[in-house]
Amino acid sequence: MTEEFENEFEELDEEIEDQEEEAQEPQSNDPANLTDEQLDEIADTAIAVLKDVLKYFNVGEVTIDEYEGDEGELILDITGDDLAVLIGRHGRTLDALQFLVSAITVRKIGFRFPVIVDVESYKNRQRQKLEALARSSARKAATQGRSVKLRPMTPYERRIIHVALREDPRVETASEGEGSARHVVVVPVK
Image (cartoon, rainbow, N blue to C red; front, side, top):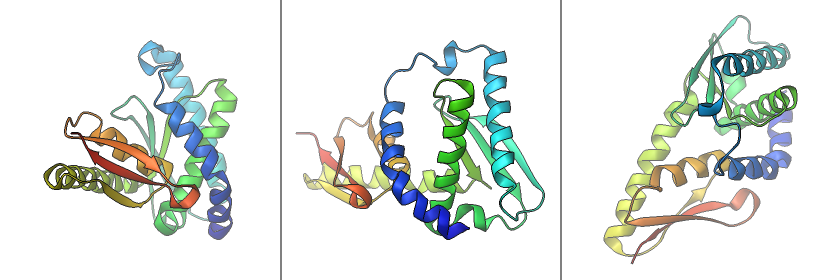
């Protein structure tokens, strides 16, 4: 089952990238403009969708914690025993699971709202590593006066790099390349 999700994710990568780019644009359904009742409805819908999808995995009893992320997104963190199957190799299965839950939630609620699916804070740890990579790459680009090309990343990972460095006056970021070779370049500001 995991391999199937990883293969499907390759085909969905472009669609995810489009969604991530849209996420950087202002939205009419900004969490700040929604009532607590609407936010609860979104969370309940996303959790129900996630529980339905998890039935297809043999993961046993799980707990789903919900909380608000730094940018107003809904984060659903799954905890339980032996959840490695949900993460997959390099987090690919987790990315596909997030895409699936997000797409179904959007269809059910009628508008796009950022939903992040995590497993035992895996994405949070990965985010911290990527933010550290972003800072060190910015420092290197600024001190050496040359662009720093990062490894190919998923749209979600690239967005973390862009967001981490958007307030850094020493550098600018850009995504380059196509498909699975798409990567971030950190460019010093002259």
